[in-house]
Image (tube, rainbow, N blue to C red):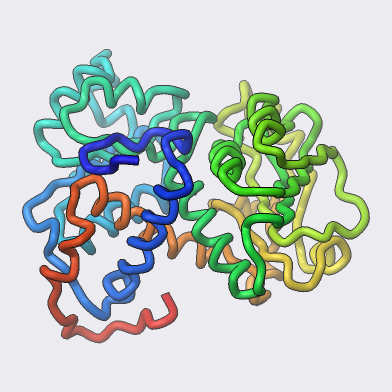
Length: 337
Ligand code: CP
């Protein structure tokens, strides 16, 4: 895969070599994310950070990653504060904003919208989530996290058993992650969701074609010998009404008791976040917060490393980062980051 000057719109663009390249550069970004060093390799570059749908992690970690490489960030958030609300097309918006930026990260509620925007852009565009379709940078950070967590337990992605739970129909993170895992071998998937929110057949077909096995269920029973349990939120913003979404909330909760009864002791607990902590949902209980297998905040931390790597690669500076670095002189305690 050729990164320099390329859009990153889908996990379908990646092959095994490209993944290892991203992960290797991400590893090299750790001293900068940990504030042990700083770099000015992107001094003068501007990121256009366009988020037309709510976001905390993706939006802020894109911005943080760009700042940590020495670049500046310009943000637009929400449809109502952009000229799209006046009927401007994605193409025109892209033509204009790409002259103000060197690279653009974008989230939008409609499937295919980021690719449509990229058609008009004069600079690389990175998909930060397009409706229920894809969330490629999340899949990369999830896979990077899975690899690290399993390595810690002497295991590999090849041959693992992953259990995905919740809203598998509208959850774009599980779509992108499952597709990316087609690049690996002999993975077992267990998909647990309400029947109406099952994993789309397009994803199941891709897994079959890759030689993986999967089980589909609408209930959690027995002990699962999963290496990873990946919990998700009911994506209420994708339903026709809040009432419709509400009937699925709280159907599959993961708490300390359920974890102990249904999973083996070192099963890694993941969630793309945000978790819905409202009482009626509570899909991932706070009583797991001190469980060492809870990887959700390590996942979020890894998002900065992955997004730094993608910026460095698409802007062609991946081999220049240390050339422009200096020491950090302020107090910082991010050693475990
Ligand atoms: N995981 C994720 O996409 O989180 P945000 O919606 O906060 O960006």
